[in-house]
Length: 142
Image 1 (cartoon, one colour):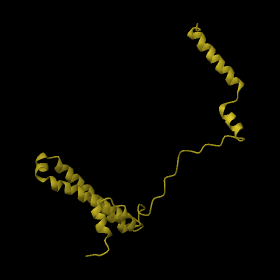
Image 2: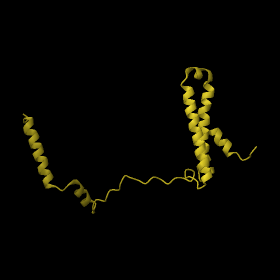
Image 3: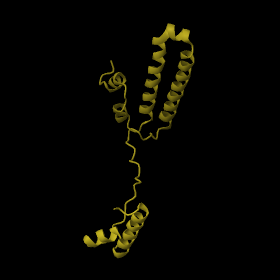
Image 4: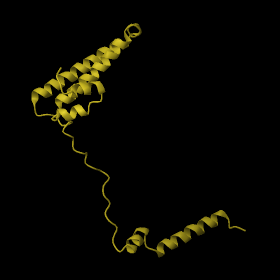
């Protein structure tokens, strides 16, 4: 028959403790097998990658101010669109026009990012709105 569970647990722990006292720690055993010491662990922290030129702000103060004004205009449009969208009658009558507030706001945000960038051409490549990107990338001014 089996020993009572109390005796089994005691004998298990006693046996494990005795084995641990007889042997080196697992890390020491592995280091000995590979003929060296355990290497120091690298930190998981990493420096953020450097900003691309498209995301780095320009040194031109006027372009930075223009970008700030475009962002301000975008925020005003967003607030106005949210205010109008809070009225069910306005939504029922002017749903398409309200969507235009959002689209124009997105366009202003992208334009601000392009103007603010130290590399505007690369910033245009990062624009997420396909039509706006195509208009900004076209070669002719017609």
